[in-house]
Length: 113
Length: 117
Image (cartoon, rainbow over all chains, first blue to last red; front, top):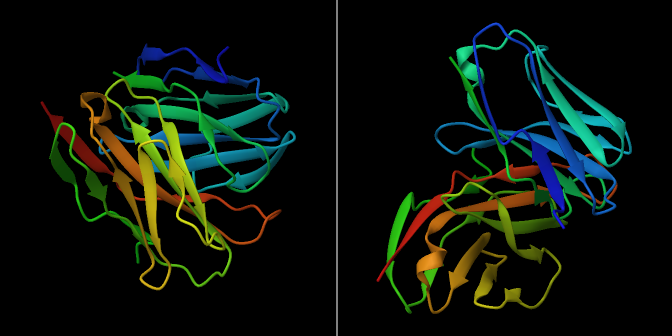
């Protein structure tokens, strides 16, 4: 059983397109996160939701919009994709808000051409 | 100033030997937690070990142990009896603050470990 799953695993798209990444966790956790990992492997938190409530919103272009339909799902929609959006996007979840052990999904490798 | 410092961008170790990956942190909070994650070349992020600031004993998980030196603000990861599958990127992270707040993990830049046969 996959604890935190993401789809798609790979995403290749043209600049200017809109794309979505989906995340689901079956751990019963209350909190979910989106991270971006750049080509130098630096991990940067983007957003966090606790029970469908947005609790962390880092300095991220407003082309990125998260949505949590329920506490087991957190999606990321990206409008007007740019070359600089190419990265690996990780979803993670933790039992409580704020940094208890986070369990990561497999990542979505986004390449913008 | 960086809150999590991993000074070794790359490390080599011989198979079956032990290796220590360094991590120093900076915080003024009394309550905090320290984490280590492994990222193999396949890309997933794997949680390895956790140490709470009030834990008196060093955390251990199988071949992983965390050498926690609070006064020095260091939380080094020790991998005993290295295996080829240990070759990966290793990240140290810190959680500051009290439970219930919107805390986030602060990440180091990682150490790339290569295990030689």
